[in-house]
Length: 358
Image (cartoon, rainbow, N blue to C red; front, side, top):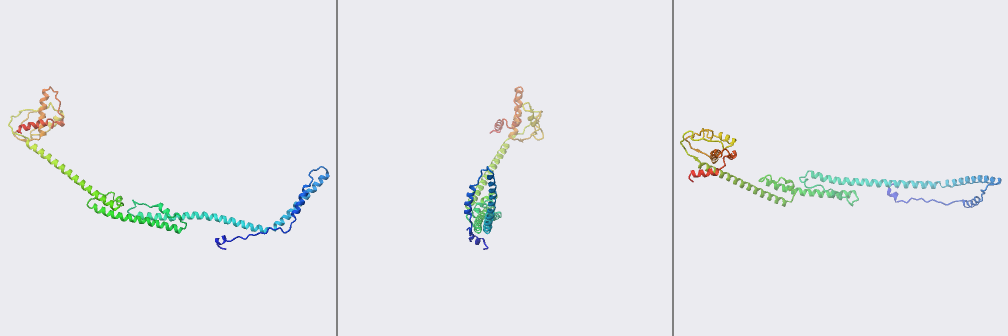
């Protein structure tokens, strides 16, 4: 017997003979019980003490020969004890071996299961690292772990994980093909419409139909936005041109006629203006080489000038402020500097129209 299977299938032969060959133990027991029951334990006389001492010696003697007889009997049973001791020792050895092997099986089986599933998980991860769609799909760890369930053989566990790994990689490949197809469509579109797909990575993992719809929608919106911008620009340019034409038209209508006037024909008084307005007017040479707005005489030269409505309004407000300032005894409210070229412009415009005969 050289294997555990062989030794575990064999029955151990262990038959002992317990037959007593020769003994008078039963008669001796009966006589001993009678003698022991009749021993006098009431010691009064000398005879009583003497008899008790003799009984002590007798009991010792009986103890001695019983021990001798028992030892002789057990020596004859030595072979039986040796056999039972060996059997008990073997039983303990097999029990310890069983416990050790059971613990080892559980530990190693758990280790192998982890190695098989972990290798499968890493195989899918390594493929994903090189893939363009790794932002959209991940390893299905649960599916790989479930691939070894209800399988007792290591070979079957490995087979189950291999099938699951192959299935997951095939799904990734299908997604990669769709990604490349969508990416090509987007790149072709961006040749004419760049910048419409900043989210192309996310969009490319959608179905081809979804991507085509997105391309059409974004291109149409982009074209519409361009049309709106072009229209807004056209309207703005037209308004600017119209304003310029109106300004030129007004400037062409307003003309100061030539006059011959003696020097010192009139003066301009600044009492109705605030100091900032005075300064602006004093520093504004409107009539060529001769400054018109000074606290002095206004020499008028024999020339004609083109003035804007704002300039004429400023001149008008200068006289208006000067006259009112003196008539209301200095209580006239000053015209703000920012309003001097617009305040009463409607009145000025009416006067100009009357002068021109319109």
